[in-house]
Amino acid sequence: MGSKNRIAKYLLPIMLEEAKKNNITTWVEPFVGGANMIDKVPKYFNRIGYDINKYLISFFNEIQKGWLPPDNITLEQYKYIKQNKDKDFKMTLWAGIGCSYCGKWFGGYASDYPESRRLKNGKLPNFQIEVRNGLLKQLPLIKNVEFICDSFENLSFENSLIYCDPPYKGTTKYKDDFNHELFYKWCKEMKSKGNLVFISEYEMPNEFKCILEVETNTQLGNGSKSGNKKAIEKLFTL
Image (tube, rainbow, N blue to C red):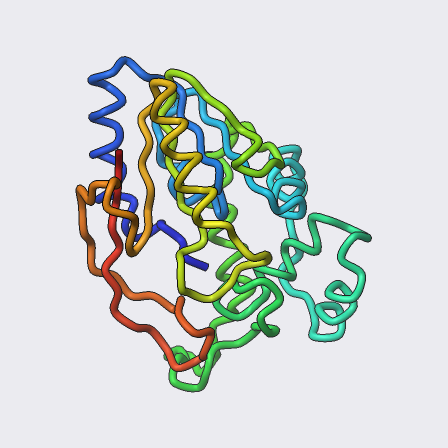
């Protein structure tokens, strides 16, 4: 949910240019999520992706070792995993996001698309298989990324580019609540330590400067299944 896969091509060049100007070759993401930004960062960077979601980090570490999720899980399996989340972290992540509506954490079992998406051969595309195929394409791009489970307020960096894609204020909640005021304070502290700090959001406090706006489709919002809505993604810095 909130993937930057489609708009990374607009955001990334700006950040890479600033990194080049400042001779920075360490890229860190405190909210790595689906790794749809960090997977496009050139491999000459030391790339580190953090996330507070222990299931997510376990999933990435396991697929880097060669594990792959199944082609399909049933509704019964989905319900079982939801009720037994700590039995198998990697499968919990796969069910909770990869097999859930819009990638929302256990937001409803997703399998086939609606009838309107029926293919010319009469078949419906399978949501789970499409997500899995996307993962297989992504794997070579994240081979050398270090994935670590931790929360942003515990992290401190120097001479790094920090790209933040936190839960957006006022939108559908992710797995947990999020302290936005603490996050703003942390960003300013990281800037004071000589880092480049960039944030994707819809709105930020006045001391953060908006340097790019991109119109995009989103399914974030109040959590309804009413379809895509237009939104203006913004890139901020200090």
